Image: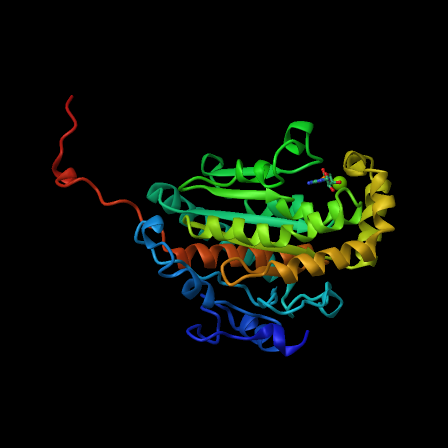
Length: 330
Ligand code: AMP
Ligand code: MG
């Protein structure tokens, strides 16, 4: 990965605000030049509509080492991002560390929910077999279901197609206090829709701007948006498709159409690169996660979510005056 994707912006500490980094991770970070962090996000939103944020300072997204953040205005070259990267981390250590990140997410979610002022939207995009379902299952294990909504977007219904393309996604964005998860997202409308030529070119081309406007609306309304692109290699997809064919318990996941889609690998990579480049903004940057190693993918994503929630600093609401002195009647 070239240096240009690993820039630190002013106001952000060189360690990216990373917390509780063990020595091993520190060492790994030194060998991963691709990490980028945006404090710029906070500055970009600050002062925009503070009233809508309920007096909360917009929080920067804290990107875990090993993830490549797409710098706004730059073109991402996905072939230059090693899908096999593991940051030099030890697998056993990372699995343990994932447990600790889950606990952090769980504790911070309780505060976010109680505060009921802001929300967090996690967007997951990937090629078929890229690991969206597995990531959501693993990373959000400790989350209170009552404070979380997961939306999986499939082929649109005729009712959905009768509306503007963002309609069905906007309806599923998280309300105050909630974590929302998008398994596939509004990006499908510049990905599969483009590759399969479901609309004329000028239509999907115009959607990048509309997507940026949509995400601007969300971030200026108190929603922190983290977008993860799970990056696997072509060989890894072959292995995963073969595993689905070989294991009867994985047959339900196997769609023969995936083999047809695989033939369009290059077209999808092109569409992903364009979408990530056009729609990585300081408010809502795109994060490319090396995802051939599931344990690495899960750990860095969990850590990014925990660190970002921590930066949001959700607080329990102030208790009513004199509550500690109240007596519960018999
Ligand atoms: P899966 O996620 O494997 O259950 O598959 C969902 C399918 O829905 C995938 O083949 C997607 O490409 C397709 N899909 C999702 N969103 C759209 C969309 N906006 N337009 C067309 N197809 C879509
Ligand atoms: Mg599928």
